[in-house]
Image (spheres, rainbow, N blue to C red):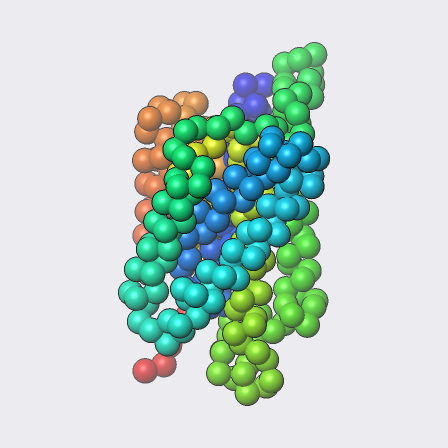
Amino acid sequence: MIFLNFFISGISLGSIYAIIALGYTMVYGIAKMLNFAHGDVIMVGAYVCFYAISRYGLNPLLGVVIAMAACTLLGIIVERLAYKPLRQAPSLAVLITAIGMSYFLQNTALLLWSSNPKVFPSIIGRGAFKLFDGALSVSHVTVLTIATCLVIMIVLSLFISKTKLGKAMRACSEDKGAAQLMGINVNATISLTFAIGSGLAAIAGALLCSAYPTLMPTTGSLPGIKAFTAAVFGGIGSIPGAFLGGIMLGVIEIFAKAYISSQLSDAVVFAVLIVVLLVKPSGLLGKQLQEKV
């Protein structure tokens, strides 16, 4: 049962990584940009949710909705101010801008909310389901996290494949120039992608801080890096790849902490990523693209 406990914990942690990784993989898949400020959007969503619940006494679900709205607006603003002017710029300029935006959001959070750690209230309580006469304990937050990840994956996959906006996203991903000639508003489509990714980041922030209650301005940094790793692991640009990469990364991290060393678990995670990229550079579900020159 101990093994099963670790496995379920790994799936729960991996579900958070998967939700965060969706933001990375959607933006890269459509805009071909790496938004390294995404981890800090998670932090902003967590703070908004925290104050909505703790200071104003709102219902936790309403607090998450408010955080989603705030992060969606933030994602659109960041895209318009920082990334839209760099559509035709070299990749290095976009990368430096993303890192600069990340530091800007972190330092703004320090000014607004200070560096003092805050205890995040659970959005569903600290209870747990006891199975097999108490041998297996699954917290309510774990169940909520896994269920939320599955629902998001299903809804997002249907949205991308079935709706007009989803088809516009896929068209922009294939060829922005051809999509524009067909009447698709490429700029609006990219803004929508940032908005969706940022809204999902708010959900991930609330779930992350419910499972690990300490909230600080640097809360989203390491999970954001690991989620980016998960996106690369699964195949960046692939939504099923983000899900698979997130789940596998979470399971590997929890088992590394349990059976190897809690201090070396991050090293194990990144070592596995290196091995995967050496064997399959495009990631587990990524497609190898060939360019004619």
